[in-house]
Image 1 (tube, rainbow, N blue to C red):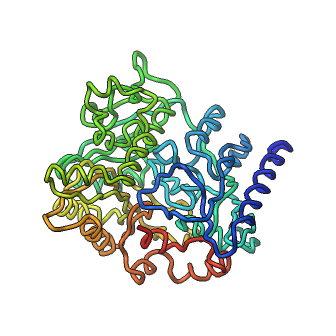
Image 2: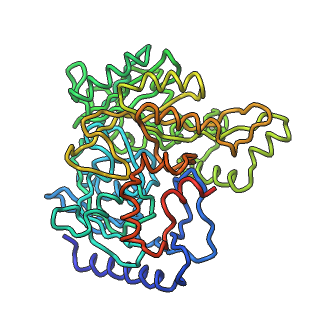
Image 3: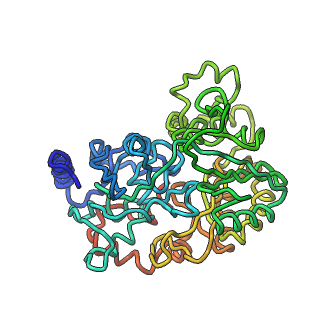
Length: 465
């Protein structure tokens, strides 16, 4: 329940953003005036002003008895966890980078090591206030008596093409202060897949409960599953590890079979080095790392460096000056049914060759729910595969062609999978809509953005370059 003060604060924010919306001339495209993003595809540069939603960052209320939180849509998970953790609670699924926003994770697709039991962030949403393309602010719940339940179901994976979440009520789950990690090695993708399937079904391994599971592939014969179990106390004479400074988390996976972290450090274990991508900036070179401010070892800092490169093409110019091959950025997350994981990894090692690779199993939490723009078979366990780097191209090929990314898209489609749309996509329209709810999206667009004030989903994630 929101306090009177929280209600007044939220109401004033809604009035302000509604006035901004009304001030934008008819026929102009509506967008958000955001300074940062976790998207790895271009954003439209429009002449019209964007909506200033910087005030929509914060937690309005936490109900510890009901284990829910009312959260402003632009709240980062870092700020959200700061508010909930003192109550011994966290969101059901906490994406692994601090500055991902709750609204972004719901309208896009978030995932983490709890997703094999809790699904994706949108699955723990109870209620949303959405600013639609008509300027209306609609409260949606997805219940049988909700006249806008189609928007509730269609909002995930709509990427702001149907509206923006201003307030979101989510479920929370209780946590323990520490997480015990076990890094289990497998020599083949088949062994890895069998272990994923067995552990996710039992939610246990070797007699121990498993609360979190993700994995890292370093080579075709070197795979690890990291199994996390929340615990109330540390074993005697055991200290927690710290991967926010000189030590690098992903290297520890190869170096030790078990580990202990505080729950907070576990949630952000990947953020310090942006998984392993900080190596592109020299942040893993010991001499450089010692001089790098600890507070700047964060994913959002690296993202800003990437954004500079995107604007000024620094890397491409340096490659040209040094007569090195041009490189195609291959920054993607895909999901395939767990049974098809060995096929995809074999293809990826052979055709792409990026290492390490992140893997994370997920399964739809509610088998009766349907999310038409990113539809899973609720009876199937899927595995997310994340890879974030670049590959050298043969002479005469341009990164703009997206040849490597196109091959990945085709293979994922062949394996009955799909990929997240936070990065570049090259699908033709028919293929895209056959995967991402084309039979239902036009009706949603017509109902909630009939004047086309918001950029369409295909236009935003494929055509915008």
